[in-house]
Length: 216
Ligand SMILES: [Fe+2]
Image (cartoon, rainbow, N blue to C red):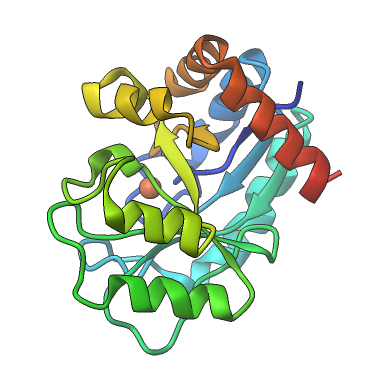
């Protein structure tokens, strides 16, 4: 079973990651120990609360990829795209096929569905990041039905969020495709991801199939 962490902020000095360059290798060691050998770096893009240095993404990714390879960890570059009312999209898709999307946790932007639809019309599949955070979304809401059944969005819950009542409700509903760390520099998160996947083997199986279908 291959475990992938599709949501992380571990590129030093790129976004709001707290991980220092000199602690990067230790973090890769923690992933390796936890049995997680694939990581997607997903720096924030267009997040109004985060100052992302776009010009640093690619060089820091190349640096990180080389360091991670020493631990046998395969890395990918993606992003976490903040959906607002953009007309131009400048995200970095995961695996060239998927876009990890977040938005305001309290209110969906008025044109939220339209924006998600235009991303899907460009040929990408949207992954809804940490769904347990959104006060306007639940597994039984009509908005979710449109996103999931209508637009084919995939669903991600955070490893820590999985232990909240909201996270448990999402996991119980059976619609969750990924659990991920959303790791900004916490060395305890890789093992937390491994443990929570042990509690939700159906999600672990979906993640394993995803890797085999899209990455192997
Ligand atoms: Fe994130």
